[in-house]
Each structure stands twice: as C-alpha cells, then as structure tokens.
Amino acid sequence: MKNKWLIYTGFLIPILFWTTTIICGLIIDDYNHISRLVSELGAIGTKSQYIFSTGLILSSILSVLFIIGLYKTCRIIGLNTIPVLIILTFSFSICGTALFPLPLRLHGILGMPSILLLLSPLMSLILWKTEKISNIKRISLLAFLIMMLGFLAFMPNVLNEYSGLKQRFFHIGWTVWFIYLSYRFIRLTKNIKKDEMPSH
Image (cartoon, rainbow, N blue to C red; front, side):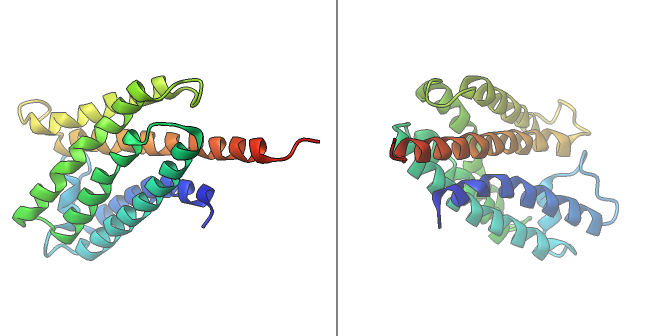
C-alpha cells in the first residue's frame, strides 16, 4: 500500500466516527447528542451497541494505518515522530471502549489513555519546524485548545446539562488535527516525489 493512501485514512477516521455516532443516535429513541455521552450509543443492551462498536474498532484500525503513513513520512523528511506516536493512545482507547462497552468497568479505564492525545498537537507545536510543515503552529494550537475544552466533561458543575457537547469538543479537536495532518502530509509526500524525480 502506497504511503499516500495510508495518510488518506486520516480523512476517513472522522467520517467513520461521526457517521457512526449520527446513525446510532438515530437508532436510539430520544437520544440527544448535546446532553448525552457518546459511549451511551454503544452501551450493553442498546439497539446500536454492535453498530457503534464496529464503527469504533474500524476507526481504531484506520488510525493505526494513519500512524504508519505519518511515521514513514516523518522519517523521510526528518520530522520528530513523537507527535505521531502519541496518536496510538487514540487507537488503543477507541478499540478498548468498543470491546468493553458501558457499564463495564474496563470501559472507563481503557478510555483514559485517549486523554493523552492532546499531547500530539502540543508536541508538534514544540518539535516541528514551520519551514518543514507550514501552518503547523496555528493548527496545532487550535486543535489543542478545542481538545482542552473536552476537559469540561470532568467539571459537572459547568454546563451540567450539556455533557454530550462538552465531551464532543474533544472529538472535534482530534477531528481538526487528523484532517490537517492528512492534508499537510499528503502535500509533503507529493513534494518528496518531486524531489526524487531526476532533473533534465
């Protein structure tokens, strides 16, 4: 599989994740995306349990392919791979929460590592140079700040009627990050090919 196609999975992951949540939300009667948590869509006994779990597992698999594509490109152009490897926390957590749905205790435990995902844009802000990957400072900061808003989910007294919205800030943040990485790294792979072409 060409590296470019691995990187394209970064576009597919958000599409798959959000499509899954929307479809499952329609299946469950009176489900409100603003007030209810995402994990409720896959809770044991719900009509959407297996659709939700399948969507998350597929998202996890695609994210591993995405990481491979990003990692290989980083090695070629000399970018630090730490921001890319941190995305593995997302892959692990999203698969774990799918395999162990609510209300199982492991659901919360396995979901916790995904919190570390916000370190991916933060570390890129520190470790990646703008001359190698343009606009990285602005986009990484934007994605980081949006994901940080997701921590409002741990503050029950803040917007207590909007638990679903607070949690979804985190998902919006990584969506922005994944789409940007896909777009920018695809451009980088094209530049690599141009540099490898023999000059006449």
